[in-house]
Length: 628
Image (cartoon, rainbow, N blue to C red; front, side, top):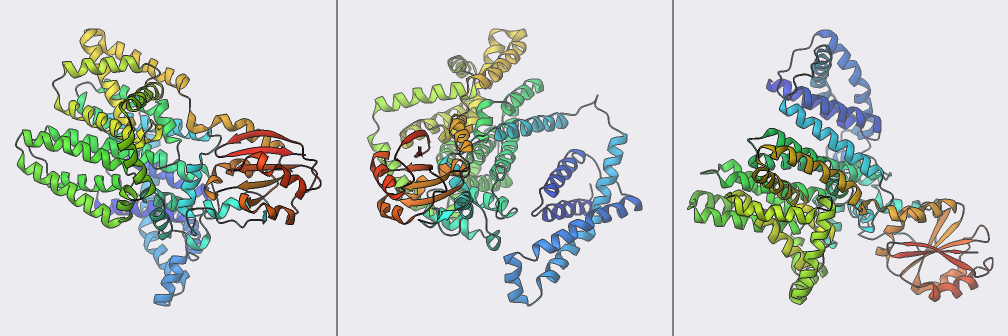
């Protein structure tokens, strides 16, 4: 593949993606072309297209060029550039568009030429290894998209992910109390969507995270996707990020497992397919926070360390990459700092024992530079980890937790992992792990197991409980340890028939996982409340809250009512000044106060209501009541 051809293809994809702003159909085309190019040119040379394909490609790109110029001329970044250069935005964007458009014509011709040649010469009977892995990736994408599409509701933290990524006025919602929002969804839209004038303004997620408790990388990515569709909200903005990093996690899992079963490609593929269809992994992808990215970093750094253990001397490029991986992990989730430190210390001890002094120097420099750069990029992480309320809470948990509480949390973790990843067969997997540790003499495997165990124990101690999402960073690693242990066990016990027993066991675990897993991140248990809200779509809603951070979990429910009016529980006298009821019924949502504290005030404020009420349900921090 020639360099100039590579550049034209990149220009073409860049053109497609830039042209996709505001239009979901162009997004689909962009991604489709990208997938095709990645698959077709995986190990092929680009053929020079004829004039017919070049002309066709140029015509296809004209609408994209116009689309790009019209939309990007309104970006606030381009308008700021106008103040400096005094060049009209249309001219600036037009020049950029033409620079990309001209080589893109050649690239479009290449893609069209390749597509037609590919169709004419399709052969499926000789499937390459790379092609098979791409098929597994496709299966994972379909499964992930299916699970995300079945998501019924959102956790408050998930809605806050959008707010922290996009809200320019701080980390909490900025509605006006006593003001009626109709449609009710409008009360949330300023918080969870990007406003037109603030697209690609990364000071928003950065500053919000300074005042929150997490590093900013995930929120900057979510802000980027949301900026492509300003003023709108969709589960797919966060979902696409999770699926993308899920694919990267699948690749990292494939590379990690390949270090241990490289002599048996079929077993490697079985393990990779099991990862792609694991109910625990898919459930994690449906959780709209930074943990899918953290899972990728966990698998990637584990693969790097495991692959570096058996080499006599790793290259400079290896340690440069390790430095960037640690930076990425630290800017994604603070718990990843714990895992990075643990696995690097284990690696360092192995290097010291083997007297690999050059590698020790490389490890110290790369990890030290990673720490310095991560802190330089986001200095607030020091306050978050040691002085913020989460940091103080973590230190208190370390000091207070008893051995009995730690043991209970470990048992809780074991039950959770058994159901999430191994279809309820956790005890069997644990037995095979003990067997594998005794039988194998592989320091790579020992290092991975030790790193995972120390991380799990540390998080249980620091968090004070077995919170599922805190273990997502090592879900892929734990899944690999379990499957590899099972493989070793079947090979030793069943011998010649071992691979068949392994395949059967993994198949049963995968199928059982779909039945045993609670699929908690889909929040299906709230469907009854949402159906009730749909039945009351013409009714107005009064939302009485104690703290604003309690409100985001109610987004899906509130958006179904006719209107919503927010009142703080410390200012109930405002109720007498409101006129929000269109009929003789009212939905009241309480986030903080109890019904007994506000019932009398509501009855006095709204004469249409006789004071009769019934509880409709509860979700998050709120309880819903129907007054008539």
